[in-house]
Amino acid sequence: MKVTFVYLDISFDPIYWYHSRKFIGTYQAFPAGIEHELVVALVGANSETIKAARQREFESIATRFVYEPKEGWDLTHHKNIARGLDSDFAVFCTSRTYFWRPGWLARLVEARKQKGEGIYGTVGSYEFYPHLRTMFFGCRPDALANYGYTCDDNPSAVRFEAGKNNFTRSFDGNAYMVTWDGIYEQAQWRSPANIFRRGDQSNMLAWDKHSDLYTFANATQRKWMENLADGVYHPKHGKFFGKLKNKFDRYLRR
Image (cartoon, rainbow, N blue to C red):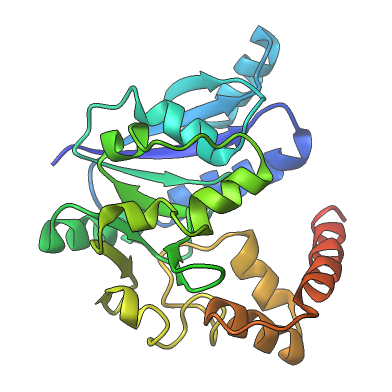
């Protein structure tokens, strides 16, 4: 099976370079565990100087670079990149994804070999509508490339990931949450221990800003976030989450 792993480097904004360094450091410290091609999209690298500088960040890793315009959203870029891939299975992640344990890609590919065609991710959530979060997910690249939905801003990205007719749903039930200890169908996504927004989240194959946000929160805030992932809502959710997110963003910029 030919496997491609796609990472987005948000080249036009230096604030995001910290996340790229974290990705590179954890990618090297915790090997994927299986042969693959790493494709790094330099997003918004609109000059040769920026391209060269960003490429130097990855010089210690075998990398194929592609270039994406600044305009769009993470899923916009992933969909564009998917059109140019000839792999059997492609795993896509966001700029803020990172790793903490080796074998993360091998584990996802192992699940794909066991269960067959479908979509695979490490976070299954019932927030809004059941979906696999697109911070770290894998599928046939043509399934993403041919998905009939345009994603070019935050509202459309939310609909793409978690709306009524989201990308996960297009796989007609062949959607699997993969953790270190199991492979789970939709009805079981919120059952295991230490998954997204539960416990120490150590069952996740990869972490990102939103798993960090949960770690950063206090016990009351954590309960709110866990309830949301479980599909339990409260009318004050928006105000609460906005304040916490702003606080966390300030923390990251210190």
